[in-house]
Amino acid sequence: VDWEAILSCDSEESCRHVGFLYARPFAEIGRSRSLVLLFFFLFFAFWLFNMGNTYHTLRDSADMRHYYKERLGILSDDILATMEWSEVVSRLVQQQHVTPFCVVQDDITALEIANIIMREDNFVISLTNHRAFTSRLPPWIPPRLVYTRAVQGCLRTAIFRWAFDSRSRLSEEFLTCPRKLASRLRYMGVLTLLLVLPVLIFVTLVFFMRHAEEFRSHRTSPFRREWTDYGKWTFREFNELRHQFKERMRSAQLVAEDYVQATRPPTPLRDSLQRFVKFVAGSVLAVLLIVALWDDTPLFFVKIMDKNLLWYLAFFGFLFAVADNAEDGSQNQSQTLVSGAPLVMHTEMMRLARCTHFLPASWRPPAPLAAM
Image (cartoon, rainbow, N blue to C red):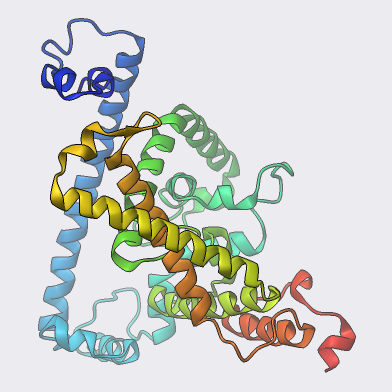
């Protein structure tokens, strides 16, 4: 794609003669186009890798679906959706007595099933609790950067690919040769350093497209707070399955929003500013929509400060959506609590601690307030 030619067209006449594609893309490859070509091949290799993983995942899912139907008697996904996980586990325990699927031992318990499912995640939880990934970080590097998906993928590859033997037990080499683990971590660090630029571009594009779609479809605020992956691994407990943890974090998200609201004193100025921005953006947007319905030609050729009206239509549409969502969020907050009151903040913090199962010293209130 000839992006320079596309970005250079500024009128109907100039855009009419623009070629969107290079006639001979490999004729003159400079430094910038060589870098783009390298990124393209890296992304293509990453796509092939994901296709391979998708194939293995679909194959394993088909085998699991067949086992659920033939062995556990769960004939459809609708039946599975209405079942509790404990009932599925009880059928697995009974199936071990009828047709053993675990050849290491005769009986299997619900705890052992959870240990098998949570094997790698339990290791990550333990390493997080012991601060194995963050204890030697410089002060200017936040711990949450270690728990990004790219870094965690490298760590899981370096650790768990060689941690278990053919019987899914910890190998003797993994326990007795820490130097090999250190060398693998160094190799993964060098590889990550070489791929940091394309990975950064890829993550930025995925982040923009995912959150733009969420904002359009669910009307969520682009400034909405979310738990970081570092916080989630800190809150997670041993043998806590993913669906159980997601449900707990969903409750913790709502309680955390209530706590943030309780720490804020009422600000009529902010509410007035939101309503003002919504009114101005909505008025301009209504005029532009009327112009577009009457004749869309002015949207492309009428310019204000070197921007056509189509740009202003998108800008004020985004501004109106942000202001409207912020106003709805402020109206949905509970009005029965007095924001900024110490007792209210302490109550909301204790609710948050019950959801997160985490109460560090920095979260704890002073002794006289806790005694109340």
